[in-house]
Length: 157
Image 1: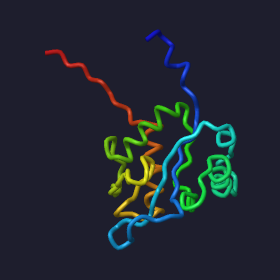
Image 2 (image 1 turned 90 degrees about the vertical axis):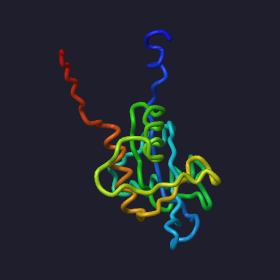
Image 3 (image 1 turned 180 degrees about the horizontal axis):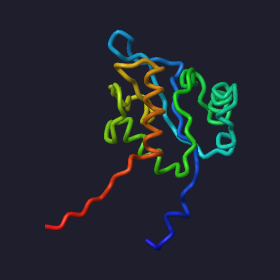
Image 4 (image 1 turned 60 degrees about the vertical axis):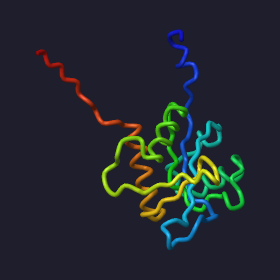
């Protein structure tokens, strides 16, 4: 690969996650809440002001109208809406985080199941409700965007 070739494909975007209107399983077996996670490079989502008073309503409207997330797949609660500088890199890292193959976040770790029979982007959580899981998602993304510093120590023997 030529130097600089990868930088040509780096694009900003949004990594998002929400609780769907449809449920999965039953609440008694630890499932019930179905979550969808995805990414977008659409200009309307990138231009959205997350600090506005009605930010969640605007985000839901963008998901319904621009990204066709309707019906049982429509958002009922936004868990994550993160602006990232490299959409492909951060989306892959966040998917790994959801699947449990990445760095741990302090506090209770969610028991996440990827519901592949529904789709690759659908997940359920057995030990947390939407509020706690949303906080975990935000903390995970914050840790991915600002990784801890690792110092290298060279020791001569």
